[in-house]
Amino acid sequence: MYKNMFTQEQIEQLLINKNVVRCTPKAITYHPDFKIRAVKQYYEEGVPPTEIFIQAEFNLAIIGAKTPKGCLSRWRRTFRTKGVARLSEDKRGKKGGRPKTKNLTDKEKIEYLEAKVAYLKAENDFLAKLRVARKE
Image (cartoon, rainbow, N blue to C red; front, side, top):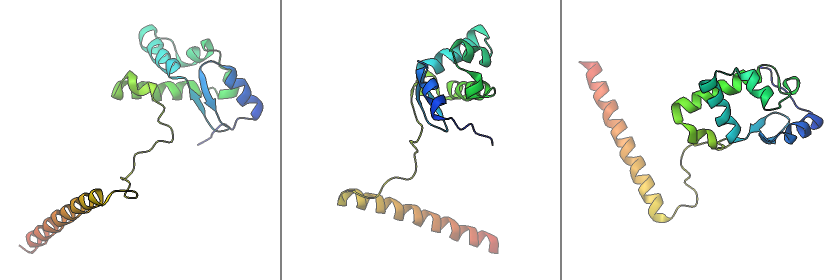
């Protein structure tokens, strides 16, 4: 997939726009209010994505002609599935993942390990029943 790489000059120009929170050579982080406003304009007024970005004073030569459509598509999906509140959050770089086991108290470690043992026992019971069922 082709990605724009922004020069320092382009980054500085993008940061002037009030709808940009931050910008790196690889990505633009848009202001949450802009995202919400863009989705509402699209749904309520029927304004095309490119026109929304032009009205917000973005230079399409810098951000790319396909960027508005892609961004609005992502934002609309988020809006439909998780609502306006999720558009306001900046989740970039904040991944879920498995729970941390470092820096736990002894009590928390015991609870974690007991839960893990119970899970493994249930898994073993299931596999034992599956083996019996195969033999029949």
